[in-house]
Length: 259
Image (cartoon, rainbow, N blue to C red; front, side, top):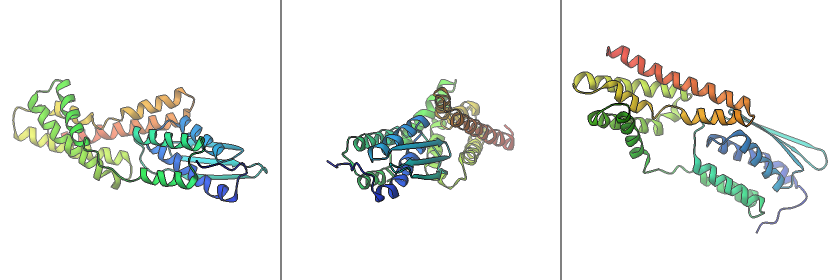
């Protein structure tokens, strides 16, 4: 067991703000609510001997101020440029690590090492089958037939591939949504034009559901309900932009192909 020191050392004052920003960034990127991130960072500071910790988090920035026993204030801030998602596994693992820190079972070096493990990309074998089933299922739900569902599932694989490979090269989620919806729309329109018997609108509906920012809207409403109005509004505006980009991409594809 690691025994936490009562007195805050110079090493702790130097390293802890960066560690807290690393934890906060990972939680924010994983889609955690703002109030939860602020609470966890405050607990982290207290566990490592900080008298009082002030944390301010929005969707694009994290600011941490440590108030030491001698009255000194140490402030660090970080701009968050990474795209946020909804990684429940990552949030749960970080929560367990913070719990271990609060129980005195994890040093700062050990916590940093555990955070580095979270950054290692692990392939999920269910991503492609999940995209296929999701696209096909929504196509059938909205009135498509089995043939439409098969085509929709094929484009679900295409969308999943680009989500994993192309998203890191796009400036932001708006550009990515516009690009992937346009490419998917072009492909769907060309197939339905060349091969009769397919419903382009049903196939598009099935595939667009894979890109709709529904969880982001839910997170926005959640933040506003608990009082984090700024973060909630920022997430809501982002969701509207993402949805608008999806609509523009598919409409451009329909216009170019003349369906």
